[in-house]
Length: 492
Ligand code: ATP
Image (cartoon, rainbow, N blue to C red; front, side):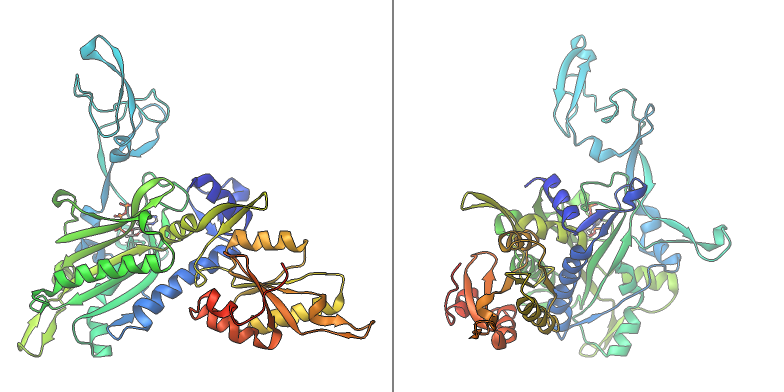
């Protein structure tokens, strides 16, 4: 799967546009178009339904993006949320030091009288031990030694631009769950273990953003902070370790359930020296993106680090009273943290198919019906026939009370089907002459329409009056053969 194909489909069909494109674009900022916003909302909606709405141990939060600046001192972001950065002395471009090291380079080795070698990614020269010193873009400029660069966006609160009013755009949504721990605990009378979930924007001044929506400076996260009693044991194991494994399993199952194929998913355990300062253990769910295997989400055991830090810096107690042991404890927290934009990219990439149908190329997005931006397209077979158009518009209006439904009559039926396949619409409804009959000849219609299923391209004839029930069954999870078996096939 090629990223350019996805970028071009995304623009052509209204999923993702470059931000401020008419002004030449804003580096690595993207706008979600009419279909993109539907897909993105659907991802967040099913995540919320599966991890918050249906669980009695979960509650939600929607916190402000701007927080008290001390939050970032306490969390460690002011001191540690940095990436090593190098500059090119010639072209002045900036790179993340570890990204520069991850590209192979041409080296004229001084230890071998200037012989030319291609040094593989991540390795120094085997003869002289040198690492890449020249800019990977212009190839001429020398790179500076690495410096630490803080990724938080600084801004000023209020009209005065002075040190006292400095604050930051949040680089993760997590901290709001920690600073609101006691508010949530008291207002909802919760018992451990319980989790707080939040989906919202985060900002990171990434040194090298890119690869479409994979790495941007403004993005959305879906995060959960799951608090457990560290003194509890579950199935003979410490509660935090048990729940960490449970969340890893639940998250992978969730991505599979909405269409990511097994062979494109894998887990990666963080090495000891790679672990964030707060983490006891972190596991990434990686996806085989068009750019290769990369992080889709991270699931960290953050221990009691955050609650203890905020208690220390705020002077407020952030503990839980353990009724059984009659003692106050600081809960441990397991954090499943996923990027909405990366999930969007993974679902699109995994759904993309090119097939050959009767000698013609068919482009198909096999999106899970719950994620598909449009659920149903209603299409008139003949747009010149008023009665057909009227019937189709009425059907669209009725179905649109329940689902995102479009009406399209701007091309011949074959072309209309292809258009819907390309954006992943699971079902098309076609109204034809048979549906409405021919009043001039005194022929009554059968009041049945054709439903066409995207993946199999099978077609059945269904009475208009049964459409809502049929679609409700299908969107509630009934399989196509289960439903289609009850109706006669349509002549294709
Ligand atoms: P990376 O190593 O790719 O920079 P990270 O380990 O810093 O990511 P986390 O801090 O664990 O990322 O953030 C949780 C999730 O948020 C990531 O798994 C990813 O899905 C998403 N995310 C983080 N940074 C970005 C970004 N710049 N653009 C888009 N999504 C992001």
